[in-house]
Length: 129
Image 1: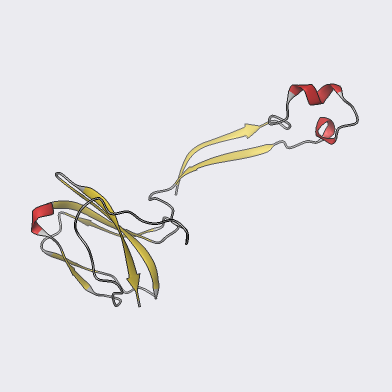
Image 2: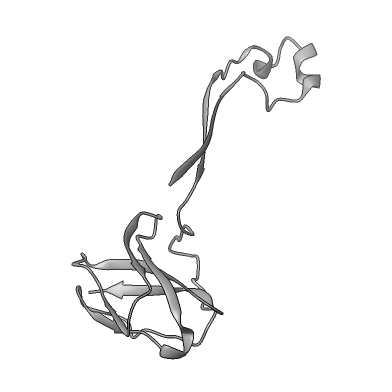
């Protein structure tokens, strides 16, 4: 993840101003001062209920084994591929790959492969057993 901004926020900024005139409300006296960190993930975050959609006809057989070789479709003319964990951690990047890529040694799990080419881009879900 990339930090896009870091700032200091004063307390009660989310409370409506009408609450401040009533001394019996707890929001009037609460204090939330602190730092706010704004983050931008390097890749789409995926959880167990979110479906990863495909934007092209390229499909990879799942499940795969660790260190598997994945053939690349010539017609997509891929410029870049990036392999991520489901929470957005970049594991591997390939620039101008030839006709196949080899996955690094990976533990069992679900991974996200983002790809980009001259006229296409998309995301594939990879299941490693």
